[in-house]
Amino acid sequence: MYEWSEEHRALIDVVRRFVDEEIRPHLDDLEHHGVPPFEILRKMYEVFGLRTMAQESFQRQLERKIAGDETSSERRNYDPALTLIPTIELCRVSPGLVTSLGVSTGLAAGTINKLGTPAQMERWALDLMTLDKVGAWAITEPDSGSDALGGMRTSAQRDGDDYVLNGQKTWITNGPYADTIVLYAKLDDGSGEEIRQRKVLTFVLDRGMDGLEQSKPMRKMGQHASPTGEIFLGDVRVGRERLLGESEETKGGGRQSAKDNFVAERAGVAAMSLGIIEECTRLAIDYAKHRTLWGTPIGEFQLIQLKLAQMEVARVNVRNLVFAHIERANDGATPSFAEASAMKLYAAQAACQVADDAIQILGGNGYIAEYRVEQLSRDARVLRIYAGTDEMQVIAIAKDLIRS
Image (cartoon, rainbow, N blue to C red; front, side):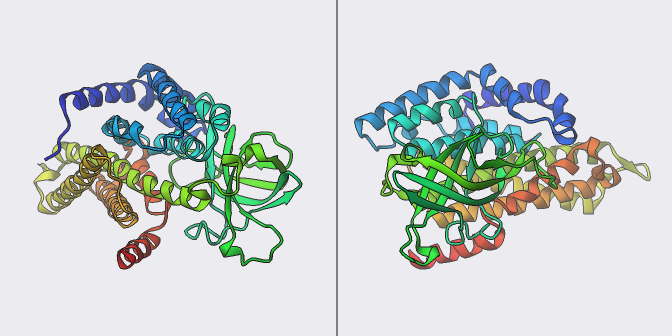
């Protein structure tokens, strides 16, 4: 059975110390004063040598791209636990940090590295991987949340050697502050092809381009540490050098690229959920030990014990999902679409339930921001929405099982 190694436990201790010293003191600024998370994340990159690791990883990926090597040797030679442990630990205190980090260095940079030419990788991806620049991944639209690909209306029309982009994207993580935006659009070639069937192209945009507008941060229920906004495109003209792969026939294409990212994102939600569950369980246990009622610690009451037991069951189950994912990744395997969706569906629901139970155990104090379970409950709630709602996960799981 998989367990954390001594190296993993040492990493956990170091990350927790950083979180306690460098993040917890700034939680109120992130939560209530609109301070963007990027300087804290950059400091973390410097402290743990992640910037240097990102540069080395980029160089290896670039060399393989130039050599035409499409194998996944980078993934096979890398311990996925080294990425998931910081995710878990950061989510114990501020899941929004993980959301912003993952979108910039994972979704945005990862898409460029996968679909882009070597020149495009050097132009945009490296700065995203090192956090020198902030990235956004823009696929969702006001009327195409869970139907992101089929319902997409943002268009790309050919105009000579250029493309002209028009449309709107919403709920875009890092959107208000992004320097680099990976944007999906439907090709409108004037053929009259039904819009749901049109080819999906992927472009890279830079802040300040003519016709590109990035909104102010939205006011949200949770994950205040992760700024979310809208992106508006009004006749944004881009050359072919901004089309990833510089071809409309890029291997994998925009549709497949998006689906691959959905699989990775959904599997990652399990690690985020584990961090929330672990912290809420820790806070609830500590409170149940010390809060007395009628002269008795409330942890002695059976109804409180039932909630604590259910929280522990959820923690063990989600931890085992994460461990199984690490084991398979070490073997070079990736989850199927159904498996990734199942992980996301269960883990997200478990995180929300555990956070809600923690609030109930803390009673009035659980409703107060000072005790932090209130924040974690708000932050957990979006896990059942982004990367596909619960309802869409059910559909995805069933369809994938029927087709297999």
